[in-house]
Length: 76
Image (cartoon, rainbow, N blue to C red; front, top):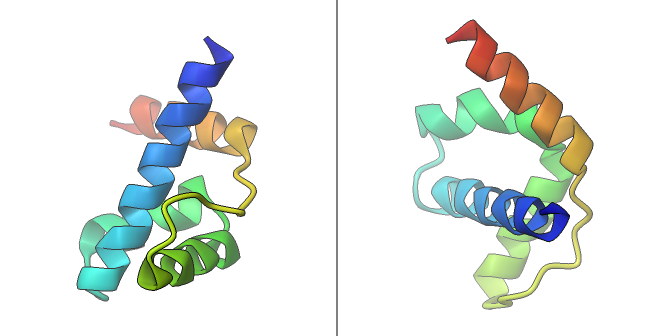
């Protein structure tokens, strides 16, 4: 179960980083990134995607992601 959650977080992480590469003013990016991840890590992932790297060396805080995701669900 933990591995599945980590894979989900990695997919969200990569998707949000790729959103900013295509559109700098994307409202989804601006809403979720500060809540779910550290911007420095997102920026590193964006640089990796620009270089064509498929794997990331960034550290993702799964606990922070799950806490922020839960709070976002409660808010909606």
